[in-house]
Image 1 (spheres, rainbow, N blue to C red):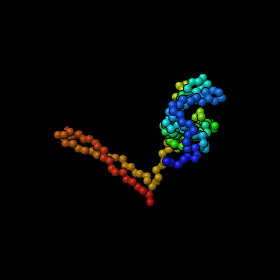
Image 2 (cartoon, helix red, strand yellow):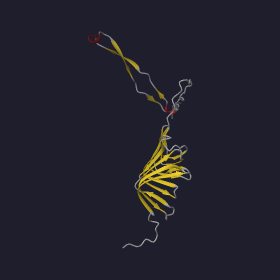
Image 3 (tube, rainbow, N blue to C red):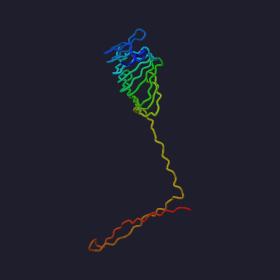
Image 4 (tube, one colour):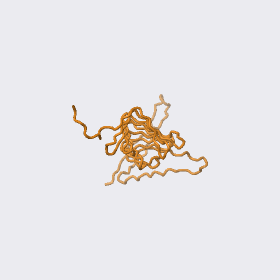
Length: 217
């Protein structure tokens, strides 16, 4: 037989299967969690909850309509505050028409911030952002991004706007004196054609001479 476990910190105090849980804030239901397996550890530091077989979360607005949903392959919640989502993480905010995709996402509910240290994609109607690290508020209005790339569409021009945009004139650098070229114009060469071929007519064909390069010493 194996050794007796003296400490219970490695064992969950509760394991539940087929969970559908509502979470309220100030007496108002704000979130709903659906998961296949839910483990609760009360002796760890910090205390944590595990969702090893995936997590589906919904957020409700003041009228109890779903305005956001989150999915992940694995999830952890520490001290009922810090969420760590791993695997195929997808956040779809219907209210803001925002989609977040990555393999990790941290959500600090006390500080009201999201952050991640892995490549991610944020797609919205007005912007598309990619990077390897980010931090933002819960509304995704203020983003701090590292190694970023993306795009932002421009608004169509107002037909009543008579202003014009002129591209800056490109400046052509002057050729250094040491590389100035002397170009000789091609001379015309008269070619005689026999009477049998052209009744004594002549045609002219340009003959190009090579370009001479002069370089000052």
